[in-house]
Length: 252
Image (tube, rainbow, N blue to C red):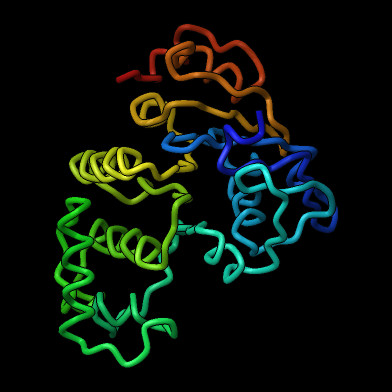
């Protein structure tokens, strides 16, 4: 039933000159789940999420939230609907502090004292287990700290659905484990996470369901418990890989 899904993208088509990046794609997201979008580079994963976040307008298709059709013309519309996106390339101002990056463009708060805003951020950090100094300048932060800041920022603006675009691309293994702890805490709080990746090992470790994209089309959606690295590799590539190829695919 439609009300089972917090977000539905139905028959989405997005075209650019000479290419159909998304071809009649349907994706349904449940409350409190980690839903992975898995595919090779160029499969259409980031384009599809850019449509959901209002960065692109589709040529065809419909988006629903909690069973009701919505129109997302731009990221402000997405934010108002509780949809936040953490991009692979962070959207932060290096010379600003963590807190100033969060407050940048925040008109809803009005003239709130800095100490009170710090308190809001610190309470959010405590709740979700973030380790961040609101006063620290972005240019002094490690990659994992910048990513944490981006997640706090979307939560500050009320995101219930959080899109993570290739979030582990520049992280160490230890930092990836820290990110996964944050993701699990978010879903425990009832938030939904869309995890964009081309790394099967990580998808198998963190996701509840997996949608495989190839050349702009959805191949299938699988429960994590019903698949393995061999099947995912075959679906991503579009042919059955030999054992020598599969030996490089690790499962958790």
